[in-house]
Length: 348
Image (cartoon, rainbow, N blue to C red):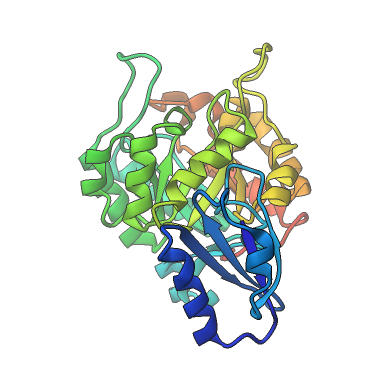
């Protein structure tokens, strides 16, 4: 249920009104926009009478939310959510008050190798993608692989190497967590990634919701938009509103590409939700030469950012080399994308 409050309502009256519902066992979510203040009620509101609530002198009108996702719903939060992440690279360049952002007018690019393989490899790539304008460094320390015989990542050592790359470049780091116990080594990780295979690992979602760090949530291989948003709801219901939705392609009957990039998800998600949406064109197609046109298409569809795999030697990559760009190819792509949107933190 959504309660739209009258303009210029004193904050102390809003606080008292909010407590009334919390005392009834309901969760509340207050969203203050430029012209509108909304109080969202989360929980079983079936027995509540809208007319009784609307009679309160603070209330403009009341709306019932039919969708099962509440906190991720744009009705609860009409304005776009902007997620700020402290960035030493931005601070060094006196850019955006030392923050990198996701959402609204901020377009960010996450770049780096699929897997962390070694210090020289990772730091070299980090420096290259930063010089080309990347805002975040990605790299997998814990890797979910289809085959148990494939490279599974360096684990805790990989996290340490990501920290070294962060120290060398100032770029905030994005890496995937696969199990609750792995959160113990993620203290210096800036954005926690939930991979496609864990999109409905509800215990894990609840734990990352409690950790307070921004979460990049990837859409499951065959997940519907509703299921995708309900997974975001799990994270947000634990008090963490900093969720970034990532469309990375879904599985269809065809196999000429690794997955099928659902570009229609971008405008739809931005219509029904206030959360930022990024596209992973590397996983969507699984073919390096397709990353450029899909990146352009993502921008045209209204995405808030891109997540691109970059490797110094894709032919020898321990995972996903066929979809990775070289640093030179990534730099060329970034220059071409400048014609589509103003990228942040470009420092050639």
